[in-house]
Length: 357
Image (cartoon, rainbow, N blue to C red; front, side, top):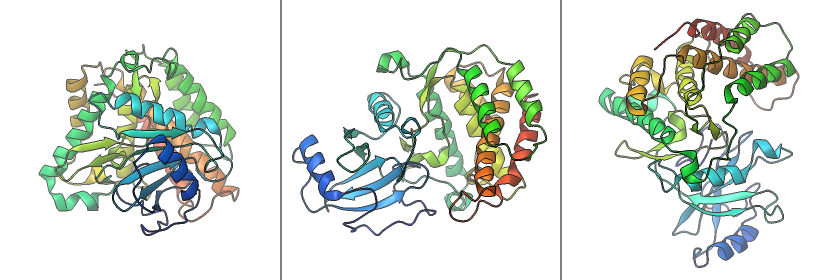
């Protein structure tokens, strides 16, 4: 989750006007921000949490006239590599002069003495991160179709950016990217082993044995889907948010993950990251593939592999959540059904390996 224009319904959000919010000392923040952006603050600061949890924490801060978004790692002990504020700030800043819609960045603070963790400040962008079909349905099928088409166009625009041209050539290791992904997620699954999973070994062997020749590397968002876009009142994509998984690598991993998120919404498991793609008018999988191919000019003939890998990745992530739930390491509700989707995802991944475009 990221710099949202509205609160994430799963996170308790304080009303705007709070002078004390967890993880953000406003007095210390103000001293830093006034030094970084002289004259930017013109009144008493108030803040609210608009997204948080295991992902990076996002706050809206206001002085009553202007508002900003502040991002920091989750509270408590976290791996710095998993919540690297400098990387998020760097990729957003690098992309701002391009055609990729991203918020403007104002300041990065790596001094943990200020608020207890590194953080950065960026523009607050007005818009809606559509997550549910019930949010899109009142718009009608024509507007929904246009929004989903612009989502695909935005992904193609991102993947057309030359990483070297925006000083991001060292932002990732594109050579051998796919092989490392396969190894990484197998290692992750082994670390979360608590039960035998039908299809897990077979799908891993298939993706390991069918690594395609990688195309030209691009900036990869890592979690691209509609609810990581801020869509304005004119149904335009105002900003792409939530860059914590970004790297430089094979861009078709973004496209495949987008499609798998949509397919999860159609699986009869009672669990989905989001179901916006089920709204009438939303582009179908084939329409998304065709539009992306047309806009990007990329070869999608090996799409089956990428879909197989994306299914495997999401299955591994959810199995890790199930493992923590089974060992009493989760907090809150909603985790009891996560384990039920893992094997259906693996089965769908095996089926998708046969797909070509």
